[in-house]
Image 1 (cartoon, rainbow, N blue to C red):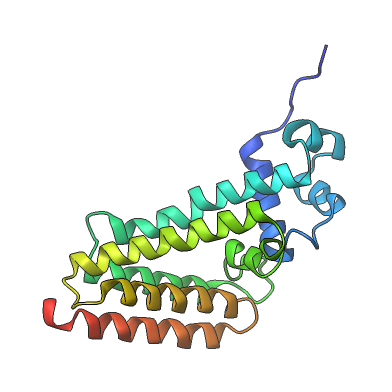
Image 2: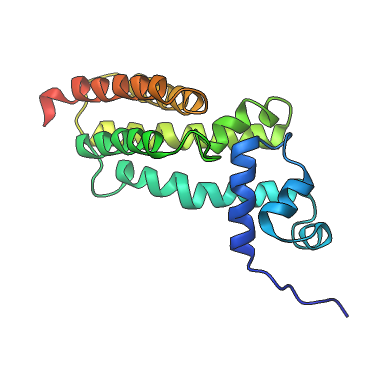
Length: 195
């Protein structure tokens, strides 16, 4: 008879998520995960199958608890100019609020793109799906705002600025803030005639 699980899965996944977020998949050891979660190796493998299984759970948690709540301002009732500004301003506030030693700097998926996704098809697909989801949300909000023609191009520019800022946030918060300031100016210019 197998033993009962004695830990809360969501708590373990969130703790592992922050380790992967800070160190990346490849630089995170199982010992790091044991220490962060308080769960031994055999329990981690029993619950998640492998380090990769835990990483996949952490990425799904990140999408559900960090990314999608942030995108709601672009797709919900606030979509449009106010949603676009709230999105960019929210990112700026988040980047500036985190201490330099926080593992939660930047974006877990952007960090993954710079490492694991470069040589792993499944990780590449998750990162590309995130990019597409972000761009679609931005496109929707630009459309609601009544932005001028070339909404697709504008959405790509904003998503590119966002992703660049999240990569820079790992190493230089001020540079990330400048990029997000540029994104904010673009929003103001593109939506100026449709307030």
